[in-house]
Image 1 (cartoon, chains in turn red, blue):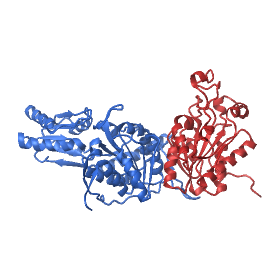
Image 2 (cartoon, one colour):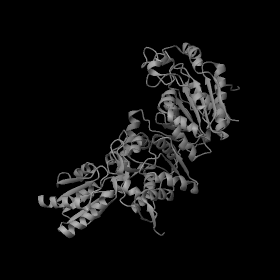
Image 3 (cartoon, each protein chain N blue to C red):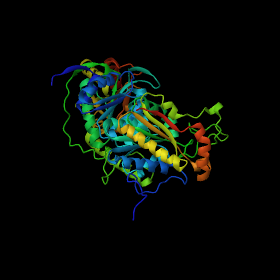
Image 4 (spheres, chains in turn blue, orange):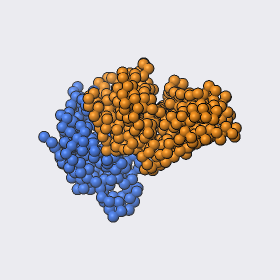
Length: 245
Length: 353
């Protein structure tokens, strides 16, 4: 019997701890499929800092680092500089990357560090229970913005892909979404392109993935992807923001 | 090899290169800038990598990445910068990554000043970052000893998978002295099979980790640390004894202060007939508590001299365990004791005891 669908080899046979309807599992699978298809598993090293995905080392069947909150780009820099032939990626949430780790991501991009960043933007802190993130939408209710994010007091959401694309060291930056199948297919192409950018040593690459957090958004999985499509995409338009030939 | 005249900071950098350090990540701060400056020029000559990071926080996390990849790696900073590195040092300690961290201590707290003090003793030997861990801490008192300690530090770090700190001060870093780069004693170092270098399908994968969410897992790691720290105490404690054989008063001092203490001892013996001696810890952790406890059996009193308000004195009191009086003489703000300050204190102790 022909096998038409199976677990990617770069993923272990382990059940995800993620909530029902969370798109971390989809993102993990896409990364693993790209690692398999590019044949780079034995030279790929992942760095997962604090956040829901800190346990990603339980799922990826490759060498991994757990890292301090926000510091994955610095850890990846150290790992990549020692073994330039390795493919090093970080997997960071919005609180991690756009708040506490803002300096590390900007400077890794500015240096043109030859690493790949998978940036999960779900507009909320997931692991700590739904607090306001730097990417939380204006008016969005969270446990620390119970009346909705008020820009007068809390400022505005940060568009990371647009911001980093202004840096000369960034070679490939795309924002994709995981809310439906056509977009998931596009997201995979973006991830593959980002890894290829690193393999070709062109510079820094980042894929921002708009992701659903039904648990902390207080929505069902179906409602959550609809909310993402209707509310997040207008704030965070999809597309390629930087591509160095 | 012939001796060369070098600044302490430069000798530390050169010693690191000779010990096989090929990666350096750092951020500028006075009074240690000669270390990154030297490394930026020297490392490319030996195929190494120097990177000026965006912050001390980034630098220590780059160290985490490079050490986890199996490299010999170093960072350096001074007091306020070392505070910023503490989160990373705690992670490095828990992930059991070997590396060398240099702290050329300045005055403080806060931004303080750029003159030498010993105000970071507590931070260096009692943890600094969060959690239950230790660093091996070397406190050299000369340019030569700084070079020797750095070369040994890389071996000790690799041998025990532990971060090692070189605790100098602005004085040790800025003064020039003759130095000879000497190979440390040969050690059988374990292979870095744990490093995240990339592994093929079917091979055991490496995980550089400081997260242990289950009680049993975290407890197992802490037990491993307990045993490791016991072995380090047993094998790596280093100190110098100076004229302690017949000493009535035993001075305990390290680094810059120990140099002054030696002058004071010679002066007190010659001019005042006071038989003083010195125990100089070279490792502040592990602390030479046995040597001090032994001295407490025959010396009448102890005098601890530090360039701070009294930090190591607490460890001396623990080692002396109430058997003898332990007095303290501090110098702060960037002042260095004069030999006369110490001999005057020796005279007072001699009169009172």
